[in-house]
Image: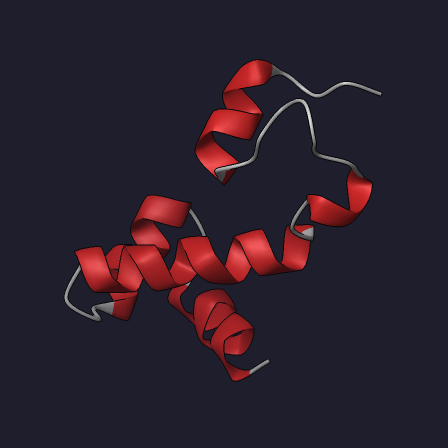
Length: 65
Protein backbone atom coordinates (compact mmCIF):
# COMPACT_ATOMS: atom_id res chain seq x y z
CA UNK A 1 0.00 0.00 0.00
CA UNK A 2 1.39 3.37 -0.98
CA UNK A 3 1.04 6.21 1.47
CA UNK A 4 0.50 9.79 0.34
CA UNK A 5 3.52 11.75 -0.83
CA UNK A 6 3.07 14.41 1.85
CA UNK A 7 3.37 11.75 4.55
CA UNK A 8 6.78 10.70 3.26
CA UNK A 9 7.83 14.34 3.12
CA UNK A 10 6.88 15.03 6.75
CA UNK A 11 8.36 11.77 8.00
CA UNK A 12 11.61 12.34 6.11
CA UNK A 13 11.33 9.12 4.14
CA UNK A 14 12.44 8.29 0.64
CA UNK A 15 9.21 7.29 -1.12
CA UNK A 16 10.88 4.83 -3.49
CA UNK A 17 12.83 2.87 -0.90
CA UNK A 18 10.47 2.97 2.07
CA UNK A 19 8.62 -0.05 3.32
CA UNK A 20 6.52 -0.66 6.40
CA UNK A 21 9.63 -1.28 8.52
CA UNK A 22 10.82 2.29 7.80
CA UNK A 23 7.65 3.89 9.13
CA UNK A 24 7.55 5.17 12.70
CA UNK A 25 4.87 3.76 14.96
CA UNK A 26 1.85 5.82 15.90
CA UNK A 27 3.05 5.73 19.50
CA UNK A 28 6.41 7.24 18.48
CA UNK A 29 4.71 9.92 16.39
CA UNK A 30 2.54 10.87 19.37
CA UNK A 31 5.58 11.11 21.65
CA UNK A 32 7.48 13.23 19.16
CA UNK A 33 4.53 15.56 18.62
CA UNK A 34 3.96 16.02 22.34
CA UNK A 35 7.67 16.75 22.80
CA UNK A 36 7.49 19.28 19.98
CA UNK A 37 4.47 20.99 21.56
CA UNK A 38 6.11 21.12 24.97
CA UNK A 39 9.17 22.72 23.44
CA UNK A 40 6.98 25.16 21.51
CA UNK A 41 5.11 26.15 24.68
CA UNK A 42 8.20 26.30 26.91
CA UNK A 43 7.12 23.13 28.75
CA UNK A 44 3.71 24.57 29.59
CA UNK A 45 1.52 21.50 29.98
CA UNK A 46 -1.74 23.47 30.08
CA UNK A 47 -0.98 25.24 26.80
CA UNK A 48 0.14 22.01 25.16
CA UNK A 49 -3.03 20.25 26.32
CA UNK A 50 -5.13 23.08 24.93
CA UNK A 51 -3.45 22.76 21.52
CA UNK A 52 -4.09 19.02 21.60
CA UNK A 53 -7.68 19.63 22.76
CA UNK A 54 -7.27 17.24 25.68
CA UNK A 55 -7.45 17.89 29.38
CA UNK A 56 -4.32 18.75 31.31
CA UNK A 57 -4.82 15.56 33.35
CA UNK A 58 -4.94 13.45 30.18
CA UNK A 59 -1.71 14.96 28.93
CA UNK A 60 -0.05 14.42 32.32
CA UNK A 61 -1.12 10.76 32.24
CA UNK A 62 0.30 10.47 28.73
CA UNK A 63 3.62 11.96 29.88
CA UNK A 64 3.92 9.42 32.68
CA UNK A 65 3.92 6.52 30.17
